[in-house]
Length: 169
Ligand code: SF4
Image 1 (cartoon, rainbow, N blue to C red):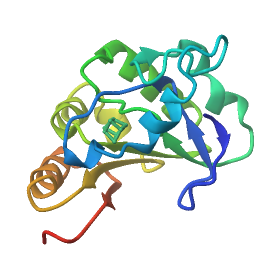
Image 2 (image 1 turned 90 degrees about the vertical axis):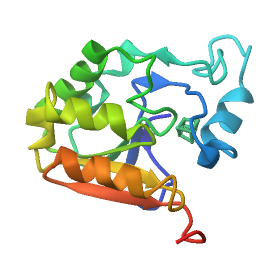
Image 3 (image 1 turned 180 degrees about the vertical axis):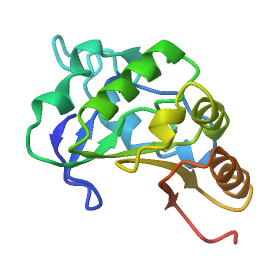
C-alpha cells in the first residue's frame, strides 16, 4: 500500500514495514490484517505472507521519489514500533523522513512505550522536526490515558491523537 490514499486525513500511505500482531482490544477488528490476509499465498503480491511482520527495505526510498509534497501516513499496514522492528530499521525510516522533508509524516502507534523511549533518545532529532507528527491510538480510558501520558513525556514538537472511541471516557 503506498501512493495515493483513500483515508480522509492523509494523502498517501507508506509501508516500509508490513504486518503486525495484536496488542490491545482496539486491534480486534484490524482493517490491515483483514486486508493483508486476503492475499496470503498469492505469489508476488505485497501481502503474499499475509499479516506476518516483515521489513520491506525496497520501500524505504518511496518518499524521496515522490517529488510533490504529501501528507503521508507511515505504516498504515503495520506499527513502526512493533518489537519485531529493529531500532536500526526505525532509524532508517526516520532518516528518510528527515531527508524528504517536503512531506508531512504521520506516525501512529499503539506501542507508545517504545516510541517514547526512542523519541527521547536516538530519535530526538526526528521528534524535534515539525514535519513529522507523532501520534497514539486512544481506544478508551484504559487504552488511552497511559498512551497520551507517554506521548506527552516524549515531547515531540508535533503530537496527535487518533480517537477510536469515546464510549469509556
Ligand atoms: S497495532 Fe494496529 S496494525 Fe497492529 S494489529 Fe493492532 S490495529 Fe492492527
